[in-house]
Length: 83
Image 1 (cartoon, rainbow, N blue to C red):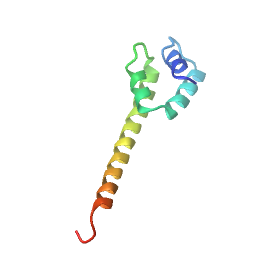
Image 2 (tube, rainbow, N blue to C red; image 1 turned 180 degrees about the vertical axis):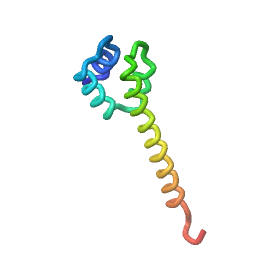
Image 3 (tube, rainbow, N blue to C red; image 1 turned 60 degrees about the horizontal axis):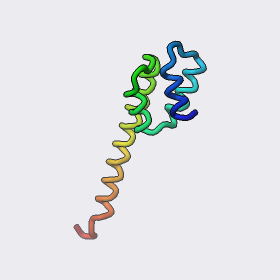
């Protein structure tokens, strides 16, 4: 599913269970930026607002954790022996 197809699904007036399945599949692989853009799109059905929000929260938290781990790793690597 493309981003444009995703937006068409999540802005539908009466989504189906198949729409939900397709949207959830897209959300799982979408970038933080795509999720944010989708979330700020006017007309998102309330069911999908919750799905997008949950995925966005999880992905942002994971990205923050990854950045912290990388920062710690870089600090450890940059220490000179005997410091």
